Length: 468
Ligand SMILES: Nc1ncnc2c1ncn2[C@@H]1O[C@H](COP(=O)(O)OP(=O)(O)OP(=O)(O)O)[C@@H](O)[C@H]1O
Ligand SMILES: [Mg+2]
Image: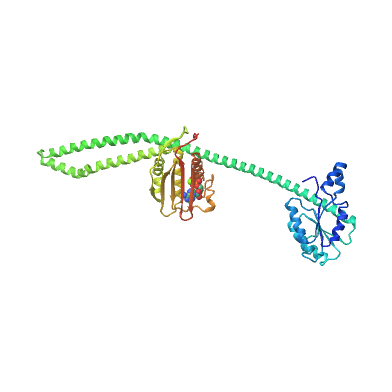
């Protein structure tokens, strides 16, 4: 707001003599010029000006001309504060139309209607211009002091309104600033709450994992011993039986040399009763099956150990995603085999730097979720892997119930579950999200209700930051 108040007045009237009158009333001394101002200032100092230049008066002789002057003034940022407008101007716009146009351009403009008589009733005019509280009426013939006082008061009103506007916009700016600060603070708070929730859930889950891992590792270790001696015994048994067979063959050959036909008969009967031929065929088979079985148990134990490998040192290790998928599949094979056919669509993957047991946990969560999403009817679980540039990816797709759009944003939230109490804690995906993010990767989902869901995990091959 400039300290110099706005003294600019525009008079719109089609009668030239009126302009003369106004000029006498509002600018009583002769029209000032730059030279005169300079001379006066030199002679009397600058105060002279303030007593003389009461108002700056401009003239227009019709509505259109008045509007033109108003626009020019606005363009050079030198607006009029007040307009005196004659009501009755037979050429062009009348007073009411003129005021409408002026206010369209500049609603701040103070307006005084000058009239001896009008084509409108006053109420009609005030209604039309919606100006009950902002239009003054000056009836001809004018009283000088009345005009001066009107001009003074309205110019002051214009100034005060301007000042109020500036204050208002300053206040609005302050409010905006405070609102932004408040919003930022509340966002920061929300982020902190989210982070805490995430950490809390990771803690819960990792504690669960750690104890599960230790249990599995302990069990695996305990089972490993008996597996060791069972498979070595089976190996020995296999060898011994071969030797026994050799011995049996030798006895059979020796039968012909036996003199007593009674003894030979008894041996034949015994051989039939114990089904010696069947035993000779079946015992190696049984041994072979037992060896296969114990090998499988060994594999399961290795998977269990591999899966639950507790990453005590929390350092990146080079590992292959494919191994993780296979050992996880072996572990959940039992649950899967009654629910879904597993389709594997793999590409050869490079090793990646990761925390293998945590990545296994992610794969496990995705496969278990997929299997749980498949309904009573048998479905399909498709596992796809691949690599692109510096990234490897795995997709776990199911033909399950799908995820409704309004749940999609929530599934990675800790404790969000749609499963009955006791079946799901709602931590699987939030933990997986945390793990994948920690690896600098990404996890995303595409799902359609009634069709199925596809989860995709992308992981970088190289890690740049330490894992801890
Ligand atoms: N493959 C999927 N198909 C359909 N819905 C899914 C699938 N995976 C996850 N969801 C939805 O997301 C929710 C959250 O999954 P999340 O794995 O985090 O928890 P949960 O499986 O319910 O419990 P938890 O994994 O802790 O045992 C699930 O309850 C389910 O509604
Ligand atoms: Mg789950």
